[in-house]
Image (cartoon, rainbow, N blue to C red; front, side, top):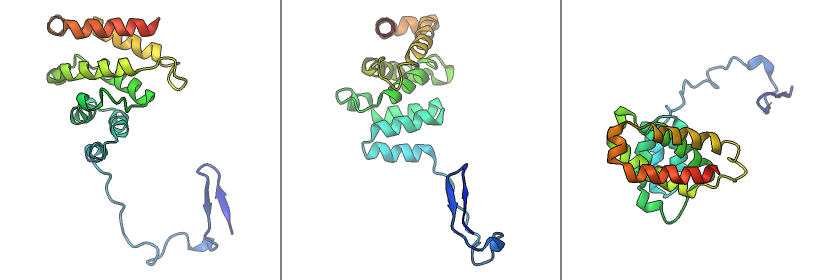
Length: 173
């Protein structure tokens, strides 16, 4: 019999419903390969110069350490003139880097985060249909993070922080 699994949109082409348990011929004991480390996948995407996919994959992991791995390897100088990023990638990048700017475990990455934030904020189109409803909230979060940086960061990174806040204010108008 032929049946359809509506929830998954799959069709079952097996005409013999009695043989569902799987016999030795069907079940070879092969396990699927373990998932690849996201850093390996990201490195491959960067090597292929698919920077948008690499950064989006890193953002998708939800781990700022993986995102830092990606942006450090892409290199802001390699993309600042070409703008290879989709708007959703830029917005996610802004949110993850901007709201974690002062994490103590990433103290060595503040300058890198600020460089990438500047690139992403300048490339952002707040009116883009796919992200417009989310832009104000994300930008307000990042602005708050920048305005509440600890004094040692505010002093050391005064110029880039002020520029970012100015650009964010312009985008929020």
